[in-house]
Image (cartoon, rainbow, N blue to C red; front, side):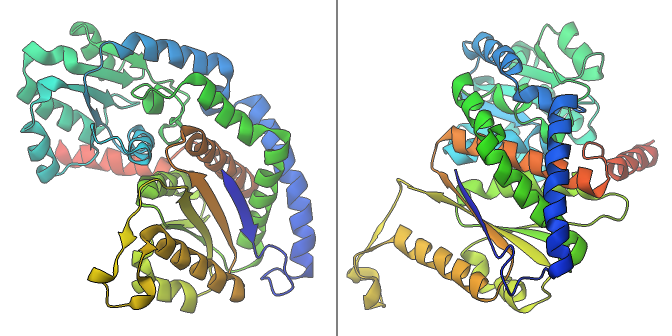
Length: 398
């Protein structure tokens, strides 16, 4: 994974002399918060970074491997699904399907497939997620008792889902009660349905928490926090130039929004698919309020490519040009314009179909989010406002 940040402390940056001094101070504070978090392990997420834990996941994957069918359906909401959805789209796995909404259209399409050829993961930490339970009931009705063994349950113990798994002798994996859903991608929730080996996962984790890369993490987080404190920046935009990573954008959107959106704190995440959005919302990004930080995200060394020929072109300059070259030109042009306009941004480049890069990006993003929350003095791991909507929904349905 290649990772660099532009417009940090340039002469024309948004940071004045005082805020630049504070930036130096925040580097030290971020370093302290990171070491404290890694050592205290406030949330079980930090345990998922260990070799011991990943060994247990590997054992569970081995036990499950022979029982998995060719097609995989994952049912859940938010963090229970978005990590796996990101991995599947990044790796180009077309045998993975997801049900993560109450959509009549999606449900109709899925229940009319031959579900006896699917392994179906039902994932809910609480065991009571309304949308997940409704979709589960519809699938049970469709699949019938004969193929109940197709279901695999991931939940906390002693929940309704756990009890259902025991009563029907279904495969069950525990969702740790101290593991927030949006931080669960490195647990069974995000990994057990894939064949990514433990060594690759641990190498990816170690890459981020190594002494060299931790410095990058700390400096970037300190810079983001300085922008939030001493400039008008209160939004974060992921400009995604590879569609395989669009689901990562949605995963990160939940991660950042649910973690930092408390006590009137605001660092609103956007997801923008480029170069498509160059023809729509980019005008706002370049000409609107200077209150946004941008992360460019792109896959490099993409094996899939197309050659443009003069037979189907109106522009002769593009004769015998590869499609990837056009996209690269758009990407580089946008980065150059951001540099010229001194818009704070960073560029993240990862390799195609190398799980190590994606896992490293997951780890980096979760640690950065935790640090931003700690620096902002909010709890990174709860979501009290969302819980209030769940309670109100259940009250209305009574």
